Every structure is written in C-alpha cells, then in structure tokens.
Length: 460
Image (cartoon, rainbow, N blue to C red):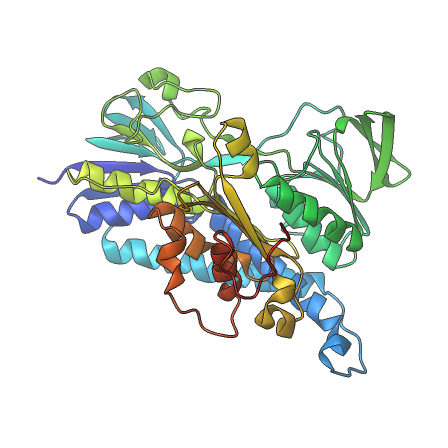
C-alpha cells in the first residue's frame, strides 16, 4: 500500500510537491483554504506582473515620438480593463494548475487544516491520517502596530490589486520589493507616490551600488522616497489620509488617497496545530533542518512558512526536494536563489553583494558594463542601467547584479555561473549573439581581467 502524504497549502511549494509525489507513486492529498496557486499566483507575483506589463506598455505609449512614431490620439489607463486583464491571466493559470493536479491524480480538498497529532489532522470536521506531512501554508502581510492603521483606505497589496480607480496620491509604508514594485506601477499610471521607509535605504539586500544608481531614476518618475522614517500615526482628515512620521529632522506629514502597508510578510503559523503537535517555531517561521524537516520526524515545512526565502521559486524548489527526499532519493537543491524587482528599469540579483563581502572580510573583484554601451539596449530605447559582476581573487563569479532592460531574464546566466562555480575563462570562448542584451553580461565578465573589447580600460 502506498504511503499517504498530505500537503497543507496549495501554493507554488505545495502543489509542486503534490504533483511530484503522486508521479512517484505516493497517495497524495492537497488541502487548500482558498484557491490553488497560493499568494504568488492569486494575489502576488502573477497579478503584479500583469499590472507591471500594463504600466510598461503605457510608458512606451507615452514616448512614441522617441521611436519616430506620430500618434494623434491619447492613451490613458482604464482601471476596470487593467483589472479585468489581470484577473483573466490569474484565472487561466489557476485553471491550468487545477488540471495538472487532476491529471496527476492528486486529491484536492478545499478547507482549513489543523494538525491534531503526529500522524493526523482535521479538515472540514473530518480527521485524516498521514504517513508524511508537508506544511506549505505560506505567508501573509505583516501589519505593524501603527495608530490609525484600521482607517478606511489603509490597505495591503491584496486590496490594492483590486483597485477600482487609480488613486491620485498613494503613500506606501515600506520600501522593500513589494512597496517599490507598486510605487513603479502606479507612478507610471500618473499617481503621485510617497514611499516611507524605516531603514536608511530602500530595497534591503540589493547591492548598494544598484540602489544608489536607482535613486535618481525614481526621482525622475516623481517617486518621492523618504528613508529613516518611522510611521507613528495615520489620520483621516478632509477626505484624505494623513501619515505622520518621525524622521531624523523631526516629524514629517504626507497625504494620500490611500495608504499601502508594505512592511513585509509573516509566516502563517497560527491556528494550524503546530504547538499541539510539538513542532518548533522560530522568529522567522517553522524551524527546519537541511532537509526541510521540522522537529517532528516525517513532518516537513517548505516555502514562506519556514522563513528561509520568501520567494515562489524557492518554495517550488523546496517542494521538489522534499518530495524526492520522501521517495528515498538523494536530491540536491541550489545554493543560490535569484531575486527580481520589477521596477522601471528592472533589477535582478544573485549571489554576494559588495556589502556582504565587506562584512565577511572577503576580498573580491568587480566589473561593470553599462547598458548605454549595448547596441540592443539603445535600439530598445532602454539604455539606463548596468550589469555588475563580482568575482573572487581566482576570477570565479560569486555575484551578479543587474539593473536594466529584461534584468529578470538576464540574471539566469549569472545564476548558472554562481551555482556551477564558473570563472572568466569559462566564458571567454562562449559566443554571444549580436545584437543582444546578454552581451552586456559577457562584457562585464571579460572586464574582470581587463579583456573586455567594448569597455574603456581605467587609467593607471
């Protein structure tokens, strides 16, 4: 008789694990309280990228003259149609995952599960038993204890995704990836944006030079970023929301039609029976070992709920890893996890940043190639940004940071380099097509040894 595996949560970690397990001969049940696909597909990665594309096309339409095109009419964003397009994409993908689960023979139960013992849980009033359990309950928006946060118009990313009209003024509390992506999208649609970030800089974890070069581009797009700002109170006043913050020079007041709380996410560990089952929970989420197994043997935690990487692709990788581990295989999971920020221009990063290397006292080399010197980028009208490559003293690539057109696509050559320990000489005889954006990565890599043909050598 096949082992029974239950997965709590149908997001990018849970549904991938369920399909993989079923394909390997396990009896698999997936429990999801809302819709399969999780936050990423329903109210996260996919819907925001749908909005991002609408904003990107609108940006292009507003600079048709720069491409030598005349246009007599006007193009303006239509909130209802943008929302309809976004919902259509989400529905298509959800339906696709439902069909995949059905085709794989995975039993799907809609409901909220709670662990009741080492080998049992309850869902919809029914007790189910399992041989192995995978917890993939994801994360949700973290709402800080700000006075007035309950006011109408103070929202999270979930509510903002279903906007009925484009706000004239939007205040964003939090300058991380979520906050900055929404800043870029709505600024493109004409919204006046103010970002309030408690830390000294935005986009923590992104290479400092990239962030420094991004700042003037944000200013050009009328995104007002205020750092080292502690939000104290939100007040509804004369039909607007007033946000009172404390900065280094005293109180600061800003106004908006809506206030987006984008202060990060928290692991969904409440009311799912962890305490009753004796499963250890740490500050960031469920504690797991190198195999993503919890303190209880046979129970695993993958994705956002373990707090390691709050990224959909990391969750999927962990889902496949755990499925293969349960099957008795010897899976390997990548050490390097790429991250992308869908701004204008895009940002993508993998491996060490300069700040991390300095903190760890590791010597390194850097090379940069500007998109302004890349033929394809200029033909696209997107010459802003750069490719920055970091290597150790043996010229092995240990970090790649890109700001520019299609950064989220280009990062994967850097990911392979970091993951496989590739160095400059490994790329030297690899011919890159011309004219293409990846040539910028090649030139940056060649620059580590001063061998880039299209880069001016620094004077000694």
